[in-house]
Length: 233
Image 1 (cartoon, rainbow, N blue to C red):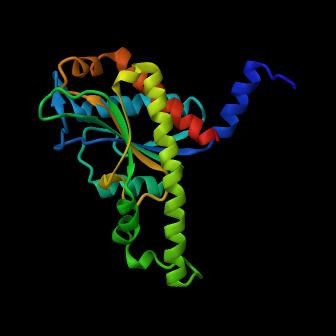
Image 2 (tube, helix red, strand yellow):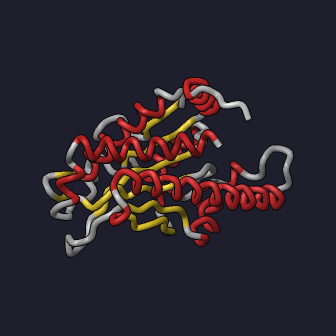
C-alpha cells in the first residue's frame, strides 16, 4: 500500500471540503440574552464560539455564514431561513445551558425528534413552495418526507461526531450524549441540522470554565473538527 505524506493528505482533505457551505447559529442575541451565570451570558458565549468555529472552518476553505453578526435579535424562523437561503450543507446552532438547581453540568447535542421531523416541513413551508416544478403535489410531499428522513440520519451522525470531539477535549465525565427534542430552530431544516449545548453557564465550576479563552478554544476546535469530518465524508 502506498503511503502518502502527511502534507499531501492534509491537502486532499482541504480539497474535499473546499466550497462546502456551513451556517452557524449563535444562539439568542439582542433582547434575548439566554441563560446567565458566573458573570457570563449565553448570547455572548455563543457569539464568541461561533466566530472561532467560523474562523477555523474558513481556514479549510469552507464557506461559513452566521445567522447573526452582531448582538441583535433574530427569530427562530429567520435563523432557519438563513440556512436555506445559503443552501447550507449543515446547520449548527450553538447554545449554553442552565438548570434550576445550578448543579447540572456537561455538554450535549440535539437532533429533531421523529415527531419534529413529521411536522416541520409542512408546518413551516408555505403551499406556494409545493409541489416542486413538474412534480405532482402528493409525490412532492412524499419526496420531501424521504429527504428529511435521510437528512436526520446525517444529523445524528454529525451530532455523534460533535459529542466525540468535545469529549476528547473536555473529558468523558461531562458527556450527556446525543438527544432528541423538537427544538424550533431546527424545524424545517432541509440539511443536517443540530443544536449543541456546550455546557451549563450557571454551574459554579463549569460556568467559570466556559468564560476562559482556553476552554472556548477547546470547544471551537472540537465543533469545527467534527463539522469538517462530516463534510469530508
